[in-house]
Amino acid sequence: MPGQSGYAVGWGTLALINAGLAQGKGRSGLFWLVISLLFGPLATLLIVLLPMPGVEARALGRADWAVLGVVLTVLVGLVVVLMAGGSTGPSTGGG
Image 1 (tube, one colour):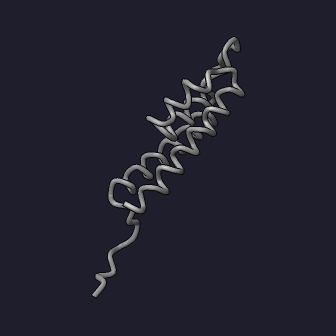
Image 2 (spheres, rainbow, N blue to C red; image 1 turned 90 degrees about the horizontal axis):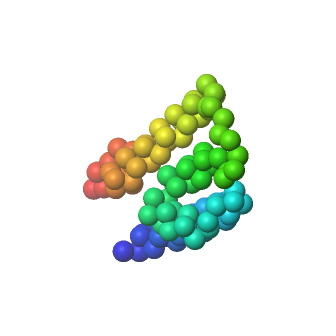
């Protein structure tokens, strides 16, 4: 399928970006590359939210929860749109 190749390239690019991001936070790039290939944007969210090793985690404040809620809402919406075949508007009938 021609449309799937662009999707795969984007997913692979995200996995490489996540590996670099994970290394920057002192985590294993190879491990997060594999996790990112499996889970994509959810892995990005985990990398960003997990504290660096050796750094004590702070409690999430109200604004942090609000941002997390927005991100998760957008991700769920994106999954719904992708599962619906990528169409976001009403059908025009075509004929």
